Amino acid sequence: MPPENFSSTETLENFKDLVASLYSGCADASPNFGVTLECFQNSLSKAIRKYLFTNDNTPAKTEIEQFLNDLNINDLFMAIACSNGSERAWWEFDQHHRTYLERV
Image 1 (cartoon, rainbow, N blue to C red):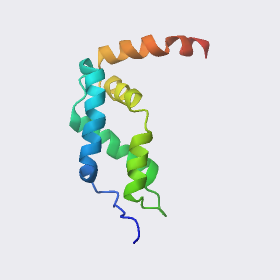
Image 2: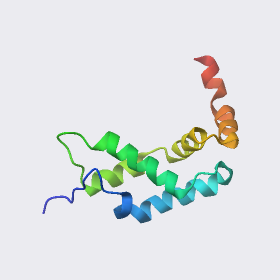
Image 3: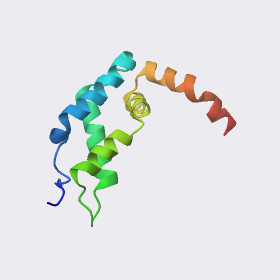
Image 4: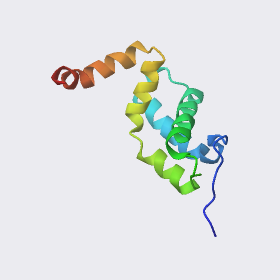
């Protein structure tokens, strides 16, 4: 049987449990970032469309699951929060990455 493929317009509805689990872990680790589940889902959906859907490729369910599991999800969560203007997220970013940025 061929793998189950998804259209680029399809939401993360088929991955609801995985996305909820990823979000829960991030929200528990960084509760002050203010990232909503909806915002998190939108960011993941955009990333999937950008990196997995090409003119010649429609990813299988397993490819999407692997992509989601391979993300550095805590850094993505921080990036989403920073892009939404979270002062706490910017402070965390500065604390974790300042020395690297200064070296560069």
